[in-house]
Image (tube, rainbow, N blue to C red; front, side, top):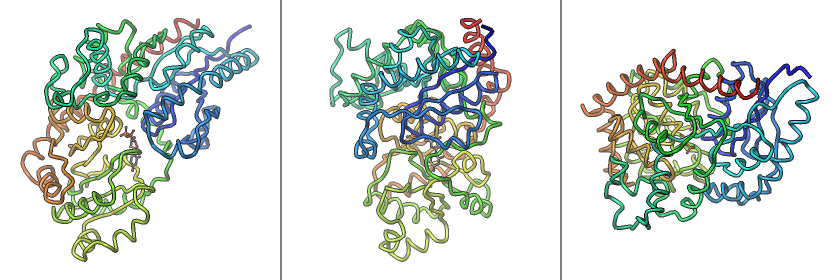
Length: 450
Ligand code: UDP
C-alpha cells in the first residue's frame, strides 16, 4: 500500500499553559506537511472550529466536575495518568486502523511531559514517540538534579534550607524548586523523567536563553533534544485562539489611548489567583502607584467584580476608573506586543515568560507554584529583566515594586536588556538555532517513517 500522508497524534493535558503550546506545535508541524490529530480531555479543550486543519478526538478520563474545578494541577495530573492508559491505547489502535484505510501512517505520538503514562503505550504499540516539555529546560534540569540528590542520599529537602542556593543549580535556591515541599510532585518528577521517548524531547525554549541548561540536559538524559521555541513565534502565521475563556478585545482599544510604555499589565495566567483580601491590597497598591494598568481578573477569582469594586474606598475606585482597565481574559499576545505596555506583573508561567521576552517587556515577578519559582529566578538573576521584590501582599510593598519597574531607572535598564533579548530570540527563530532544531526534528520523524 502506498502511504500518501504521515499523521501525528498529539496528546496535551487539559491545562491552558500546556494545550496552547501543543496546538502551536501542531500548527508548525502541519505547515511541514504532517496531518494532525489532537486527542484531548472532555473538559478544557479548544474550539475545533478555530483549527479546521486538525482532527480533534475527545476522550473521557473519568474526572469529576469537583475535581476539575479544584484547579489542583498536581492532583489532576496524577488521576489523568492513572485513567488515561486504556482510552489512549484504544484511541491509538483505532487511529492506526483508520490510517491504514486512508493510505496514511501514524508517524509519531507527541505527548506532553505531564502525560508520562503514555510512554509505555507508545512503546507497546511500537509507535515512535516524542515528549513536549512546555516548561523551561532549566526547570527540567531541576528534576534531574532532584533525582540525583535522591539517589545520593542528599534528601529530604529541609525547610531550613529554603533560602540556600542549590550548589549544582545556582542561582536557584531550594525554595525555587518545583518539588520543594511537595511529596506528590516529587513522585511525579521521578515518573516524568523516567520516560524514554524514542525520538527525543521537544523543548519550548531557545538556545540563547538556556544554552547551559540544554547542554547539561544532553549530558544526563541520553535522548535527542529539539529546542525549537518560542513555539508561538514559530507558529506566528496562525493567529487562531486556543483560549478556554473568550478574550476581551476592548482592552486593546483602551491601550490605544495610553502613552507609550505607560501601562502595567497584571495577570496571573490561567490557574494562580489572589484571594479577595489580596485583590484589595493590589487595588490600593496600583492606585497609589499612580501608574496605568490593565488587570486580568479571571472568572471565579472573586464572586462579582463590580460588587467588590463598590466596596473599595472612593479614592481607589476613582483611580481605577481613571487609570485602570479590568478584563476577565485578555488577548495576551496582542497586549504584550502593544507599544503602550511597559511592564508585566506576572506569576511567571513559562508561556507568559516567553511571550514577555519576545516583546521586550520586563516583568515584576510573583511566582506561585510549580516551575514559576525557577522562571522568576531566571528572569531576575540570569537574564536580569525581572524584578524580584518581597511579594508581600500589602499596598505599600506593591506600590513600591510597581514604581521600581515602571518609573525608576532600574526598570528602564531591564527594558533595554529585554529588547536586546527580544532581538536575539528573533534571530534564533529566523534561521538561527530554533530554526535549525525544527529542521532536525522534522528530519528525525521522517527518518523512521520512510
Ligand atoms: N493568557 C491569555 N489571557 C489572559 C491570561 C493568560 O491569553 O488574560 C494566556 C497567556 O498568553 C499564556 C497562557 O494563558 O499563553 C498562560 O500560560 P502560562 O504558562 O503563562 O501560565 P499558566 O496558566 O500555565 O499558569
